[in-house]
Image (cartoon, rainbow, N blue to C red; front, side, top):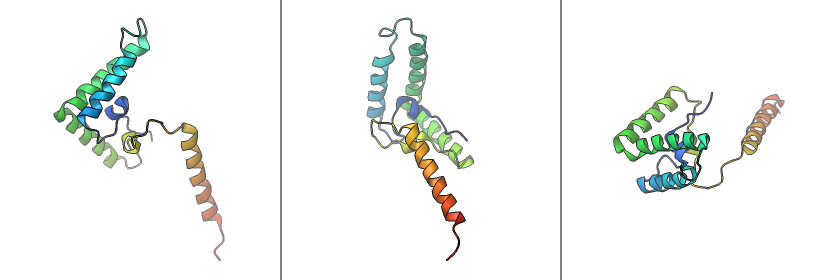
Length: 120
């Protein structure tokens, strides 16, 4: 099952981020995707709508609390679904899909070897 995509993911901040960190991330993304810097770019306009809606939720304490409760409900209902926000540890570099794929293949290989080993 796919992971839950949250407003925290849209702004690239951790779930426990302070309002100052959220505001700084919003302003950074705003400078990058603002329509004045990207005239006529429909993709930048789409990203701006997403960023604005995410900031509107995370900047309001009541909406943010509801969003956090929704994330918790999703994780409780679907244990295999983990939010990407839980994995964010503050580093700027994202984990590459190749590295994640390698890790999963390695774990599967170890399990396969472990389960097929003869008991001694």
